Amino acid sequence: MTEFDRERHIQYFLMNLKKLPRDYIALDSNRLTLVHFSVQSLELLNFFDTNADFDKNQIIEWIYHLQKKSLNGFRGGTSEETSHDFPHLAMTYSALSSLITLGDDLERIDKKKITSYLKQLQKKDGSFSCVEFGSETDMRFLYCAVAISYMLNDLSGINLESAFSYIQSCLSYEGGFSLIPMQESHGGSTFCAVASLKLMGQLERFFEVNVDSKNNLVQWCLSRQIEGLQGRTNKLEDTCYSFWIGASLNILDDAHELLDKCALDDFVHDCQTSLGGFSKLRGGGNSYPDLLHSFYSLCWLSISSSSCSSEEKSEYSFKLKALNAPLGLPDSQNLKSYLGTRYN
Image (cartoon, rainbow, N blue to C red; front, side):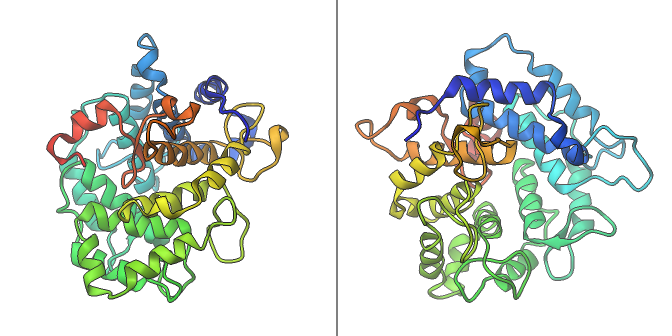
């Protein structure tokens, strides 16, 4: 197993906060998500706790610069704002979660306007679109809406029964959840479904209504392991699914303990690159990292290490913060303080 290189990973995320490689040009409209990956990764690595002089306020102000003038959400990048540039659900999730992790009090957020906007985005079948007009609708944006509402402590912007029904309609014969009804099970959409039900307080009810679905879901998730985890049947193992599948199992009564965690940890460690960060596939130190796979690799390692006894913990275990799996965020003191009595 490749040794965990915390300092190299920290430098990788700091570098991307300052200047993105040219390969990210195509993701300019999603820049806020890239900042989210970097901020949360640095928090997992305990960087902010050990570098009190780091200027977090600069990032906070940059994020608020992307808040729409209508105050009902955030856009994803700094390109010219146009009349059809609507607030985006995924960008609003990234903004709120990053602000909370950085210690902002969200006093500049108009929670009622965001909640009202969510009502406009929910469709008759219970799903959500990511923007107001001309958008695809699927499980990803339902999760974003639920997570946003949970962070704002206001679920009134969601028709919970419709959302419950939509999640139910995406339960596949394989045992997992699909992005839209009548499609194949997928690791990412499975996490979005399970985490949404958990945050809505509807997870146990779902399994009561859908008899045997919990056992089938756990079995489907466990069957995704090769050494690493694949996202769909007959696909390659991929580091990001260590989180999507691993976190889903973690939410399901710590069922991630049924995985071969040693094999999965080895796979993720072997995807570290010489530049810092993690690659999608195992390829040794010559592989190239990306922010998404780097963040979700750390998320899995956090889940894995948090469930170890002190005797079992490897060197990296003491360097990673615990993870709030349903929100997909580090268990920072800022998150605990913000959620207060809702913290779970």
